[in-house]
Amino acid sequence: MIAENLKRLRDRINEQCAASGRSAEEIKLIAVSKYFGINAIAEVNKLDITNFGENKAQELRDKFELLGNKVNWHFIGTLQRNKAKYVVKAASLIHSVDSLSLADEVNKQAVKNDKDQGILLEIKTSFEETKAGLNQEEQIIKLIEHCKTLSNINLMGLMTMAPYTDDEQLIRKSFSDLRKLIDKINQQGFNLTELSMGMTSDFEIAIDEGATMLRIGSAIFGQRDYSKNWRAI
Ligand SMILES: *Cc1c(COP(=O)(O)O)cnc(C)c1O
Image (cartoon, rainbow, N blue to C red; front, side, top):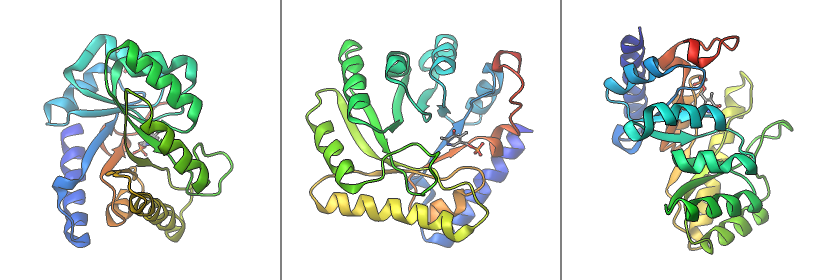
């Protein structure tokens, strides 16, 4: 089932790239493996997917213990400072840095691990109160400038989640706002290249609006069973 899902997904990505005048090579597919076990990850990895996304620090830590660097790990969830140590050890890219203090902690852990830590800043592009992320331009620029002073942080771009809605216009606005923001930032002399946006329900719009990284779970692995522990799946 996973192989079929992935084939269908790749077809859809290619079709959308053609429609949007983009090359599929510009777009990295991150398989979001949260709630799925090691066997499912191995199966997807065999189908030429190397990038996997997790949203909980402990789950990433435990899966990293089992699989190590056989795959390339991304951290996409809300990150508490006291768990940054697990995430820095495992993740090549942390998509969800949203404060100065978290950037400092990630840098501290990266120094300890003697690595350059890739990060994205999570931006709030919708006005839903519950969504994590930064939403004021001034604050964002300040954080970007701060990241430049951190020895082991490599800031590569921005990430967002669209609002939870069926309204396609609102979803599109969220993604186009992120693209406009990165353009504006780069006009001020920065060189951010990555836009992490688009999930199973909205990745076509994200491709159309310039995504360079898609974070897709259920279209590959199937529906998540939130009542089960990943070790049992
Ligand atoms: C779970 C998750 C995804 C993937 O969601 P699907 O709808 O399964 O594709 C993407 N981004 C984040 C931050 C997530 O937590």
